[in-house]
Length: 258
Image 1 (cartoon, rainbow, N blue to C red):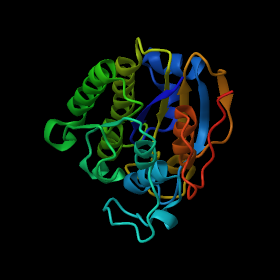
Image 2 (cartoon, one colour):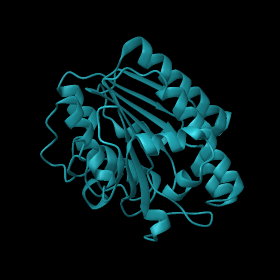
Image 3 (cartoon, rainbow, N blue to C red):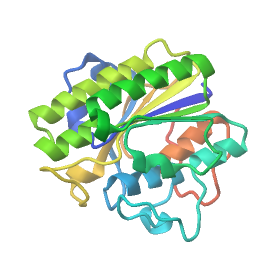
Image 4 (tube, rainbow, N blue to C red):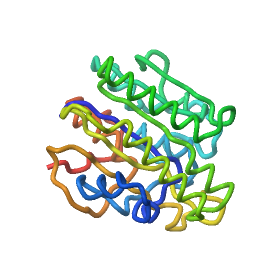
């Protein structure tokens, strides 16, 4: 395996994965390497968590503490910049526009944005998933990021672990299956979340907010549930699979694949 697809379901808790009724959720956790209680960063808010995922440092390093992007005072290279410098092709598919700042100019080969606020997140999830599937088949990018925003929206609207929230998790795994079916063996799929949630909110240091799932899917890795894992470990894992040296400023460590 020498390519990666990173699929992030905003606000998806590990216990929601365990209770998900879509058959691909069970298939993924049973056939992959599953870090069922990985940790995110504080504040457990969408943009700070994504910045930490892509830059492998905590928010006190990258300086993003809310969902408003501000330029880094002491810039740390993100995974897309590191991969671009190594000659790798990166692609983004997302439906929350604030994520446009996760990569610097000229680090992406292709980007597809569908507004979740305009089309509704369920429709936007479907569109970005189908677009990602099509692009992967036609262009075989080295690193593909797919963001699915419906689950977080359902959590804020109806409550985390509510019936509506769980339906959104089920529908998200339908999108994930669309992307994952019939992939070549050289792709590692990483399924994760940025944060969890409680009540109708998130952002605290409660376990419900801070615990995320990380699923690694590829026939060449050892199956089973593992302990540990942190959101800042994902960028080094991507680089390890692609054979690219991680940036020296990064704090995370590649997740074990053997």
